[in-house]
Amino acid sequence: MDMKRAPAAMPGADEVVLEIRSHYRLKDKPVRMLEVLRVFLPREAQATYEALRRGEVVPVRRGPRAPLEQLASSMEAQGFEVAVRPAGAR
Image (tube, rainbow, N blue to C red; front, side):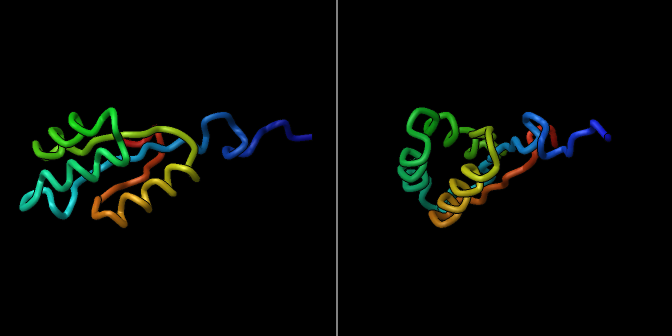
């Protein structure tokens, strides 16, 4: 009997990071973008806003793939450019 586990069965194997890369209103209406950020990230909105204004990619959540892909989809619908990547990747 082979005792190896499939990678998906290993703890943390499906952990991902949700990154915000930009927002379509970043240049022309940054305050509007901040308002939308406050809906998704109430505690981190200001720091995330400032990092995005500096041109940084901001990792905002780490966890299981399914809920973060759902959050990413909602954020994309509100104009954010986001990425969901494996937690160990960079």
